[in-house]
View 1 (cartoon, one colour):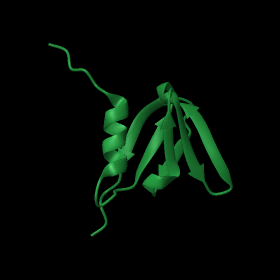
View 2 (cartoon, rainbow, N blue to C red):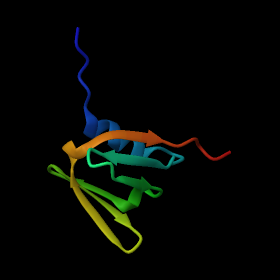
View 3 (spheres, rainbow, N blue to C red):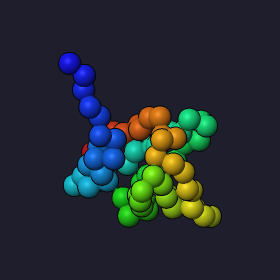
View 4 (cartoon, one colour):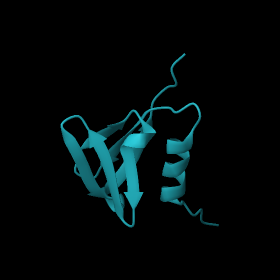
Length: 74
């Protein structure tokens, strides 16, 4: 039996957590984007936009190979 992974739904769950827990998106290129505020991420079609200090990063959803969820603040 195979498990279907709905990446977009899982990412939306991370963005909607209350309280929000920061995470990093790691791309196939090795680039890593810190998500410390859920309002700094937008998804549409096949594209993800992450606001970063000094600009924005645009990449395809298929480029994300891992998500590293940080430990919640105590």
